[in-house]
Amino acid sequence: MSIRFDVVIIGAGPAGSSAAYYLACAGMKVLLLDKATFPRDKTCGDGLVPRALPILAEMGILNTLKSQLLGWQLDQLEVTAPSGRTVRFTIPSLPHAPNHAVVIPRLILDNLLLQQAIAVGANFRGGVHIRGIQVNTDGVTISGDENYHATLAIVATGANTALLSSLGLNPPKPNIVAARAYFEGIDALPPHFQFRFDGVVLPGYGWVFPLSASSANIGAGFIRTGKREHHQSAQTVFNSFLQSPKLKAILGNARQVGTLKSFPIRTDFASAPTFAERILLVGEAAGLVNPLTGDGIDFALESGKIAAEHVIHMLRLGDVSRSQLQAYDTILRQRYQNLFRFSERVSRMTLNRRALDWLVPLAATRPKLSETLVNILLGAQPAPERVSFLRIVKGVAARL
Ligand SMILES: Cc1cc2nc3c(=O)[nH]c(=O)nc-3n(C[C@H](O)[C@H](O)[C@H](O)COP(=O)(O)OP(=O)(O)OC[C@H]3O[C@@H](n4cnc5c(N)ncnc54)[C@H](O)[C@@H]3O)c2cc1C
Image: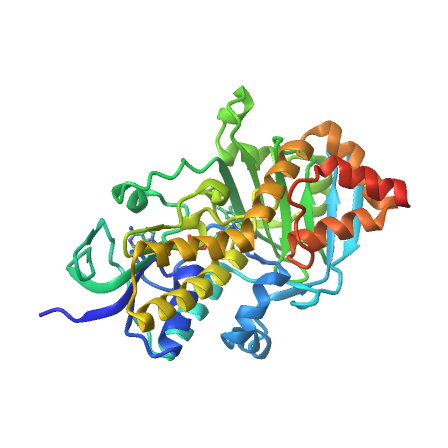
C-alpha cells in the first residue's frame, strides 16, 4: 500500500522547494515530485532581486552561497534606452531586504533549495511526470509513474500549463518568450546589472547579468502583442540583440558556452486562478512573474512560504473547505494585486521607443523618479492603486 502524505507538491523549482521546506519544518509529511532529475537547469536570467534574499537567508542558502563563493553580488543597475542613452543607479536601502542583488545559475540555486528542503525532512522523487490530480472525498490522488495520496496538493509547475489545463483551470498561454545564453571571456564587462532596450523587439528588453568579473548570463525577451514582428522566435530576437553595436563592443572576443535556450514566461497573476478544490497554486503556476521586470524567483519563494503557512493553518484547523482556499487567494491578492496591476500598466505605457527615449534621460536627472519606481518594484513602497504612471512621472518631475 502506498504512503499517504499531508501534502504532495508537484514541481521542485524555487516555489515548490520553498513550500516543501516550510511544511517540513512544521513537521508535515511532505512529498515533492519533479519530472526532472536534479541538479537540473532552468532557462532563466539567473538574477535574484533583493526581495528574493530574505527567504534564502531564512532557508540558510545565503550562508552557503557566501561560504562557497557561489553567486555574484551587484548593487548597481544600468538601463539603456533604444537611443543608446543610459541611466545608472544604486539599489536603494530597503527596510526588508539587503540593498544588493545576486546572480547565480539556476542549475546551482534550485539544487541548493531542493537539498535544503530534503535536509529538514521533505521527501523527494525526481523523474516523475505528473499527468493528473483526482480529488476524492478525503484527499487527492496524484498520478505519475504510480499514484500518490495526500490531504492537499500544491502545484508548482512553473510556466508549463499542461497540468493546470488538465485540472480545468485553463490559464492563458504565456505571452512572453525569452532566450538566454552564457558567455565567458568578456574583458570589458561592466560590474552591474544591465537592462537594455537597444537592439531588442519592443515591448521587451535585453539583459546582461554578470556571473563573475568576465562571464555573464545574456538574454532577450519580448511580449507577444500580435504584431508581425512578434511572430519571430526568441532565438532570432536574441541573435539580433547580440548584433547591437554597444553589446557587440562589450562582448569583444567573448565566447558563448553551452546552448542558447528559450522558455515562455507567465505574468498573468492579476487574473490567474490560485486554487482549486484541495489544490493551491504557487509561483509561476499562479502567474507570479512581474510583467514589467520579468523577476519571478522572488515571488516563487515568497508564495511557496505563504502557501505552506496557509496549509499548516488549514490542516491544524482540520478545515480544507473552499472558503479556506479562497482565504489563500485573498492573502495573495492583498500582497501582490496592486503591484501586478501597476507593473502591467507601466509595461503597457513605457515599453515603446518614444516613452523609453524620453524616460531614461529624464530618470538620469531625476533620481527620485527611478528610486520611487525601484522601491515599488522591490516591495519597499506600496504600488498605488489607481494613480496612473504618467501622473507619478509628472508629479516627480514637477517636484524636482
Ligand atoms: C529566459 C527567462 C529569464 C528569466 N530571468 C529571470 C531572472 O533573472 N530573475 C527572476 O527572478 N526570474 C526570472 N525568470 C522567471 C523565473 O525563471 C520563474 O519565475 C521561476 O523559475 C518560477 O519558479 P517556479 O518554482 O514557480 O517554477 P519553475 O522554476 O519553472 O519550476 C517548475 C518545476 O516544475 C516541474 N514540472 C513542470 N511540470 C511538471 C509535471 N507535470 N510533473 C512534474 N514536474 C513538473 C519542472 O520540471 C520544474 O522543475 C526568467 C524566466 C525566463 C524564461
